[in-house]
Image (cartoon, rainbow, N blue to C red; front, side):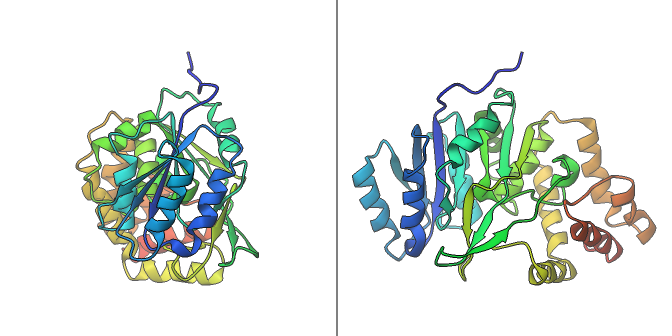
Length: 313
């Protein structure tokens, strides 16, 4: 029998900071303005040199340590900082939400997300993600939304694409426990890794077509908008430079560390993908036509074929 989420689940919001003083207050204020109140914010700072820590300490003084806890990050890179929070043994909650330091959450973000999470079996690994709404650096102008994905989430997709930004993601305790087992794996990004682990472990992935965050676009954005002609050209350039092939190699090495009960289809997919990508052209095309791997957009799918042809996967 399916076990659903409790009426008032305990929420842990996981935020990583690094020299984020310019926009941090707006994000903290938007979290404080949430219409669901049963949450605690955990912030891992990666050695900020600006006023980030002063801002956090001021909010902690006002909110209390029961609402805001400040931790010291590993000071390696942003994905390592997030993984340190995602796998932290002393952070416990029913649902975990990831947060960037420079976004703005819509007031209904938590209640909106919980509404969908109640539809799933909370005893199984569960990952929620969604679209984002892009705003200008000053937060006053809306610049559009991230691509709308309509293909179903699956491991055939997760193998070659992260379905959404980590700043939209929420997950449950069963998925956290899986991530904890592989916290030392070398990975490309924390959000992509969560999607991979969730699908590999026969988890439930829900992609929400409705956006509940404003994703600020500025020069210091780590990822930035993935729509538009310029963004597509950048992805083609990364493909030609072999960046995506390097990403796949990193994941292949990580898969060698993963020991979990997955479907035979998923395990076979890993083996065949990493064998066929080094074979002659005719066999490399089978990566897509036979294995059925796919990206969410038509241009992304074309990129897959181009990568197979050029031996860049």
